[in-house]
Length: 241
Image 1 (tube, rainbow, N blue to C red):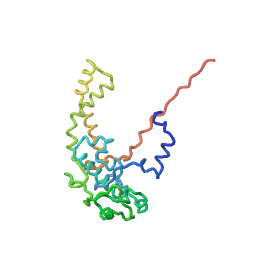
Image 2 (cartoon, rainbow, N blue to C red):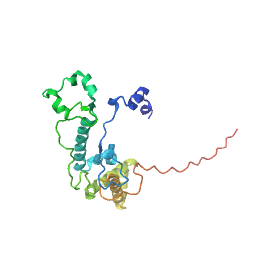
Image 3 (cartoon, one colour):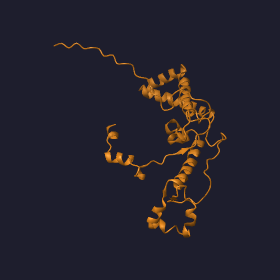
Image 4 (cartoon, helix red, strand yellow):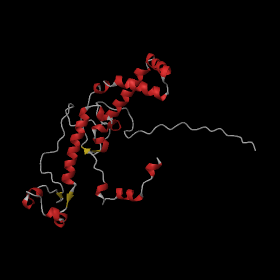
């Protein structure tokens, strides 16, 4: 923790400066898909825009469509960045001999000038292909990959087994004790309940990003605060002089 808090002031100053473009983050963004479970923002940004952003970034392991969506979204965002943001003003083009000389095979900047933005800026790296922004249509019938609950249920057996093993490790049981406790867990149905509970949590987290149909349980989307711990009761100590 101390290592993470030790940051040089110059690094923080550079990160907050609007004049240091190299310090800025190129983050994903997209339109809000239909069925978003909470009050939708104007646009989805950051991990919310990524299908793989669910479950703390592990949702991509659950289905291939999540990974396909994020690949095409990254490509679409990059094209938009190169066309609209990674640009030069007309004065900057004139002042820089590299750009004022033009691109080879494009005399008079004919093709380059066709890419001029509404603000009159020209892209540093021109994308001459004029294809429209594209996201594939998934099995859900939209550009957002909504899966079925059955796609998550297929992992329940493996989750049960992993949950039991983790529990035994937390209890620090091994050898005969591990076998005995494992038997008790299975006999009394705890293994089944544990698996169902974990799968339920996974489904609920996916519903928070509309990756599964249905509404999530009522909770704050931004990590509801943990309940306050019970107050500590300190016994007064009588010190003998």
